[in-house]
Image 1 (tube, helix red, strand yellow):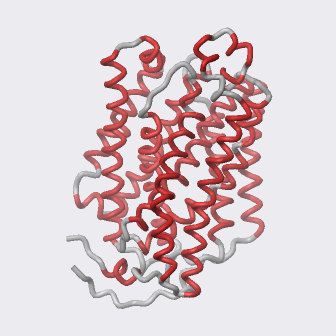
Image 2: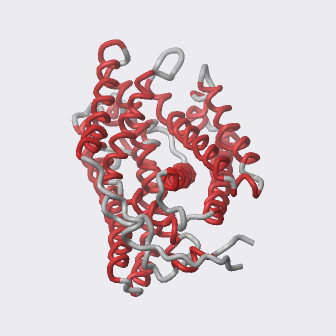
Image 3: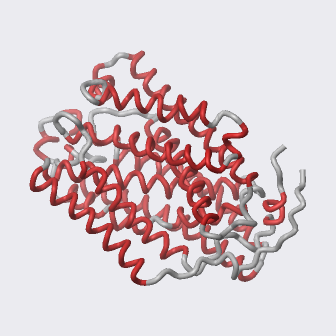
Length: 408
């Protein structure tokens, strides 16, 4: 079906104006300040560097997931030659390209490993590995220099792909060359393969190797599914915020939110399917080396978090997003996007923090400070990338289709 939309979008009207240096300095300064406060609290009255770096990794993995999830979304739209998403794709492109600031933020993790500290990864300690026959067999893979080299490769691939899609799309804004759409489509196919490999092994390296004796071949897909849920929720919230600020009011319609809501609903179900599949296979096999990972998460306060994820990340949003009206109502979709971002963070917390060896209640003020600090740093990077760029691919050959489509 076609709507009666007949408006035109100009590059000037949809270009984000540069923010003042005071705003940018406030974001980066505030972010670094909150992270330093969190570190000081842990060093003085908390669990030291080990407790802080676990919380730091949780927040870093959260914001990395938003960027890599958007990279998947952008590559998928090009691979499918999707027309409906052109009006909303630029926001995802900006998020996907905002990976370099996270690469810099990853340096404390790499340095912790390279100095041989077991505060985050036990396998980084040579003495610990020497006394463990199983880890000795993994030593060729789990070692500091190779860990650092792989991390550089992951960030390099994501940064190159994110910048490629963004810069080519922005180049098309100026030139109107339809050949650029064809080029982006061609690169999207190998991009999806590179994405799958790098995200899978990044999840293995950064999250799964926190328990180096344990492994799950589905773990990479688990992190991927949560990343897409989080990234779609972030895109929806950014679109709502930009429209509230006066941007994209003609470009993004209820139809776009409806389709984004359908994707969000679908990946909520997919996340639940992957989470249940991993749990079922390990529970059914009943091998102590595998069940120990879940056993830790069914003790003390962690059993409550496990149940919270079951209901908050799957059952409740499943019914909340099930109806057509929930996906088309902007307030409803915004609420569920915030809800799912909270539970996506809790999901990553559930993966990382049982290794922090915190007694009693696992949550601390430093967890909130790390998340807020990393969020301000991430927002700083996003503003630097977005300023001076159009918020819509105004000369994409499929833009007219995106502006006029309706869900049946």
